[in-house]
Length: 495
Ligand code: BG6
Image 1 (cartoon, rainbow, N blue to C red):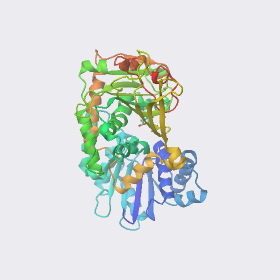
Image 2: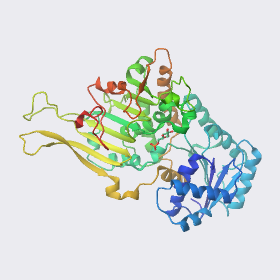
Image 3: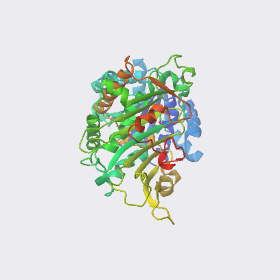
Image 4: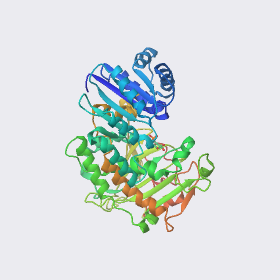
């Protein structure tokens, strides 16, 4: 970082800036992570001035900061907040932005431009920045953070990446996937590669299958206008779920550098077996919660999926024949993101147990949220029996080991990394495109006349029955390792 840093937020009056960016930046300030000289300049259409921007951001801090702070801290931070009202499609407003930057910056400064606007403005902004020379790096770093979605299919992702690269170098582009900023997601690499005991068994010889669940309790709410054109496959699978698959399945990287890690993740995506149109019907499930079509902003005959499940295969030496079952949906029974690694059962059953008794397989559960931690389920002898066994749970919870307040918001980590030029937790162009080519095949098959039917599910359930069938026909069940495991339908292991 140079002596001075400027963060320009396009879309500074919007939801993302209020809910996520402002609380993250304020907390970074409180932790002394900025240089002495820094300024945050909001750019948006609303006719605000610095004073009004500060008032608005104060309200955002009151509502969305999850930590305690003193009013004095807020006042100090607020002095660094500035605002310029402008229209993204007006070159004149970008010239005003350029002059404002010159006024605010004491000399050569690093600049981070954060695109927190609707995606249709991304290229327009970058083009204008380019035309005015605002992203030339002669006087400091110039970085551009691009919010999701990176396109809505392969063709649009390629067009966006191409447009970005016409103005910027790849090292200047930071494509956000906020899941990668979650502490418990970053811990996946540490868990796998900072411990000697797991990696030797992290393969097809010991692992029966992997499950990834990203369940949300909320419905589409006020985002129906956006969501109804998108659906869960584009909204959650193309980015968050495939990134989790890559982190679980990747080979050890050569080192902890951004490109070494991202190269290994790419290889996983490259080895993911593409579906043929016929396979899509067997290997995927699409569901819509009852009542979705009545939500305001949703087409009355909407075919948009709010739930999906699929069986993914990775064709390589480590994972051949180990299915990865993925599911995600809205308005499900509870909010939870977890990864369950189910190990193979012992090869023989030597205990005096009833003949048809099947011992529970060992399961490693990685709880990404909300109760961040790790669970290892293994068999133990029930006391005062000859040899009856039962599954017990060895648990690690972040809050117990590191305290309630130790987990920063994903955006904190991501903003800091982008400011420091560390791209490890950001998505490369090719990765976004590879993910789209995987997802596009499924979407195309879903929309073809022979595609699988859109099933429906009850709000507050765990999705359509078909999602359970996807596993039960392999003699497997969805497993819950974190939170309350009392639901026998999804978790026969805990009956
Ligand atoms: C976003 C999706 O990327 O992730 C939302 O657009 C979804 O639809 C959200 O609700 C979930 O994020 P988190 O961090 O709450 O799991």
